[in-house]
Image (cartoon, rainbow, N blue to C red; front, side, top):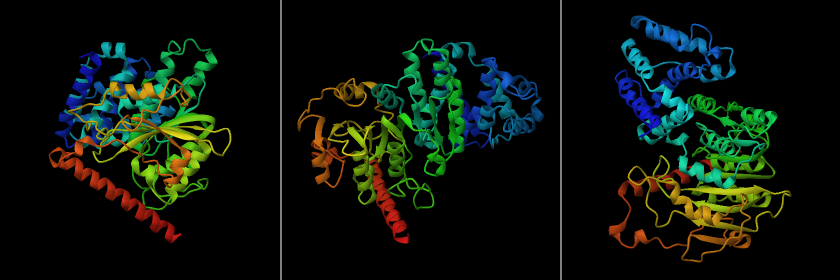
Length: 472
């Protein structure tokens, strides 16, 4: 175990201390973020961004009886700080900690960690490790904001982010895609030192941008970006509302949009969508392909229903294939997200220089059929993507030479005409599922139940969308 994972384990164990004070898993990392921010500013010698009297050393000197009262006042004042990033991280910040001894224990425990080693290995890695630990805890509900790092790394490696490109995530969560794209560029430019001063400035403050709707996720995102040396404009807001229209056109979009329908039913409140829909993923898909510059590229995680939903779904897929070259679909295995029944895919596409007939064929890689259901017992690793990455090729926009593996293989090519005949249905599978040969080989009951619930959820969304259209 390295120093970072050791510290992450110790920080996570502090959740037991917080639970004694009634703090839930949902609140835990947020509570810890406030304290870690103050401590990390001290460790990085960047406390000048904090007003005097509102720093880690000041908090340590407060006597235990007054600690909770002083801490609440500190959070309130930091939410009004002059520094833009500090203000955003502490906006609306409140603590659920009630007992001074609990807060004192947290402060003392954080102070006792091996901060020298943590700095050597990277404070950003430490914080991401904590977010990953939280996402893996089902009770926290944080899995919906966290895409598995191995999947992110595979998508980023295939998309090959370049210095000087505008890189957007319109559903940024805690920043996994943006940080991985930034790390990919830094690893190939000697941590940006091979770039000119102007290019370095662009990478740090303009290249990375996006939007996140949920305030608690947004503050974790800002903390994550800051610890990785990124000062891009990732605002809090609703991409499916007019705020999303203000996001600049991108060279590269990486995203895992949230599942479900828009709150309150009805469609997005944007007036630039050709096909209004209450299905959030279909709405995000429209935003993404419309937000690419000509020649820009995207890799997006989307659930199965986006591939087959009728009505507006069919129209949106047809529009996507007109405006973009949808060159690759990766059918992901089950169990890699927080809900076992959710089946997902990665769509890889490039915006055309024209608006017509950009997709001529679609390559599909089936990483789902006859694969294990991934989870804690069978973790997903980068090695699981090795054959797909080899088949995809070294050209980011799918332009490398490719060979169809036939009906027995996982890698196949389908013509645009074939897809049109299917009603623009992209939910294409051909491998026989060997796990369902006999009743003895059926999946676990909870997996079957989750799959049924997912199908019911999709059906309900389609009914809500139809109802909304009828009302209009």
